[in-house]
Image 1 (tube, rainbow, N blue to C red):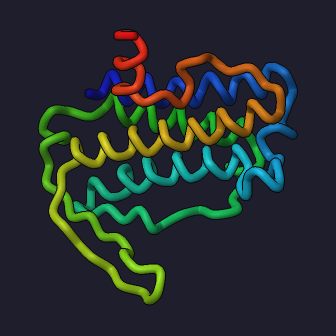
Image 2 (cartoon, rainbow, N blue to C red):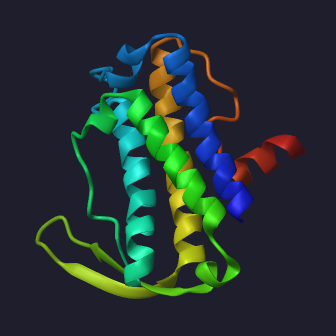
Length: 170
C-alpha cells in the first residue's frame, strides 16, 4: 500500500518537475476560466493539505481534513508544492505496519447549510487509501486543465487504479 502511495505522490512530483523544467509557472497558477474555477496549483495544494492533515493527525490520533491552507504560496509556486510532496514521500517511507493499523478519529464537517461536525473511527491505512484516491481525482482535474493549456502529460496521470485495470483488459 505504501508503494502505491509513493507512486501517486511521484505523479504529482513529475507534473511539477515538468512545469519547473519548462519554466512554466503560469500554467500552474492560471485559472482557465470559464471552464474551471480553480488553478492546477489550487488542486495540488488541496491534495497536499490532505496528506499534511494525516501527518499532523497521526501523533494526535485525530485527522481533520477541514484544516486547509487556502490561497497559500503552495498554490502559486510549483517548487514549494514539490518540496511538500518530497516531505510527504519521506513521511510515507517512515511509516511502519503498526502506524498503518493505528486507530484514528476522523473529524469533518458534513453540511453545507450549517456548521456540523461528525467524528468517526478510522485507521491510517483507510485514510491513506482515501488520500490517494482523492489525489488521483484531483490529478484528473489537473490533467483537464493541462489539456486546455496544450500541455502534454502522461496518459496515466489522473487515472484511477481500477480504471487502469479496465483499460488494460480492453
